[in-house]
Length: 120
Image (cartoon, rainbow, N blue to C red; front, side, top):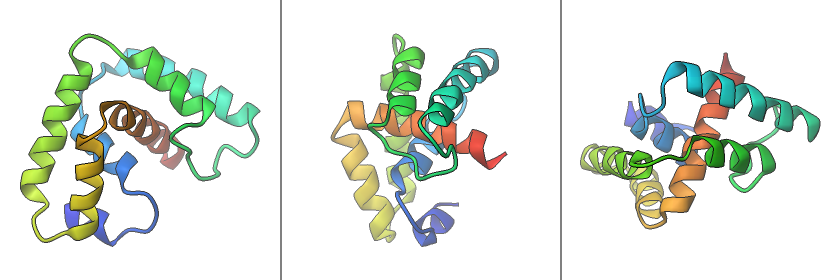
């Protein structure tokens, strides 16, 4: 799977954070929070434009889903991905960046959730 991420275009960080945070937030909580953020995204123009990690919809979703232990669980998931990323330079660089900045990693996770919703 990481080979596919490596070969994709664009920012790898939301995809990697989304993979690392699989199952981190319950379905009901995630669905409601993502729906509210999608409204913010749509209010800002085209909801299918490139996701900005410091954009209003992403930061609002990140703030709403933040909770005790979640960032630590995301960090553990990112570390597990790093163990699988050997020989994938873009993936390793993105994982290093996320591992070095917990706030960035959390926003990337939120962006990944929004990206998942847009893909459906």
